[in-house]
Amino acid sequence: MNTCIKCGSKTVFTKICKNCMEDSVSKQLEENNKMSEKTHIAFYEPNWEYHQCESFEAAEKWIKDQIEEYTDSDEGYDEALINGRCFISEITHRSHFEIKEEKSDYCEMECYACHHSPDDCGEEPWPYNSDWEHAGEIVKKKL
Image 1: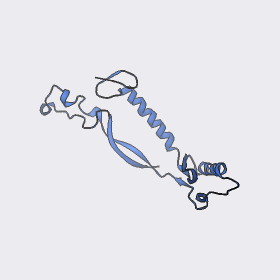
Image 2: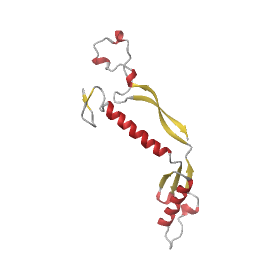
Image 3: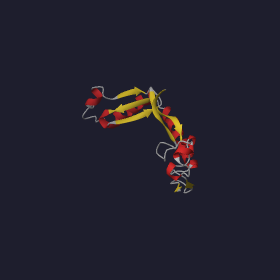
Image 4: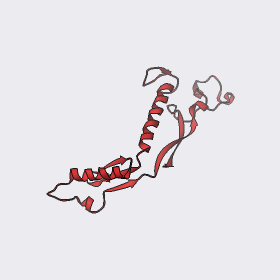
């Protein structure tokens, strides 16, 4: 028996209970949706800074603001600006976790804790890390 690291309730195999896991997943999905609205990246090499923006115009404004803020009128423009090493890119794909298997589809008990022998059980144990609720792969998702 474990204790949930977020709310303190009892859990069987994981360090986080199902309710807290669902809340975390919901918050992550909400954050991912906000991020997916950002379709451009502006890069300003002199400071090695980048900014994700919702439009080309917003990216262009961010670069202009960086130039104004960091250009010294006595020294002129940075070499990176002159040589085209500051740029705006359009995001065409984003990484996405695609769920292939769910822990709930497997036997809830680890084989060593089960009263059945592995040969007689008939259920397959979760073959991945017991802290994980899902297994899958990272894929590129076209915007």
